[in-house]
Image (cartoon, rainbow, N blue to C red; front, side):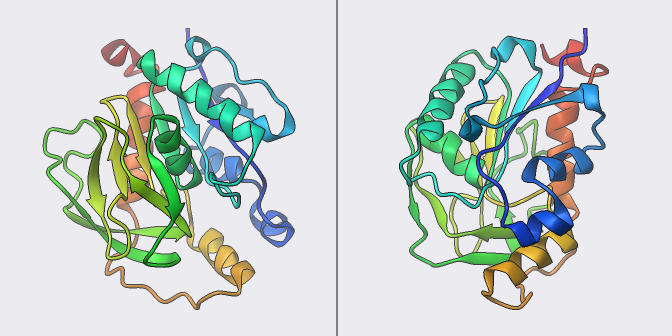
Length: 237
């Protein structure tokens, strides 16, 4: 039986971003071309209850305009759920805010990036990933959309950083061979990134990235097809 993907979203985009681009969960639905029966979206910040991990194939925690370090009952509730899911070897992927939340849930330290805000298209470098199921065959250097103020300051025990940028040493973290998190946004398009930058009033779309950000989408789709596709499910579970 096909089990859906779980998308966990905490908080909403600013109204101006919502009007043109929708919600964070919408971006993943579009990026992965998901149909209604392919996905369950849960908002712990609205009091919605997370399901038993066994009824979903995998979980992605989306980005957010909130900060993991801000006191929030939904953060602690979701972190507890993520810890249990990780212990059960349930496939997990955190993205940006979700990257921080998953790392926090597993014992990492989160805080504001001493290097400052990282926003726009930036160049990343992978570290020793030839044996990694999610990152194998990805170029050593690739570009990705980024938009974050906080970062993973210290890793949870047993976790390994697999990529870095000029401003952040933890662009990809592997916690196990089913649990990963990404500081960058594989679900972003040019339009989403542009709206986020315009809304922040921060910087023009200046980048150090040298290539169009195609590989982050490959990573996202690989996670989905490894753990959520019925074609591959017999090989994974």
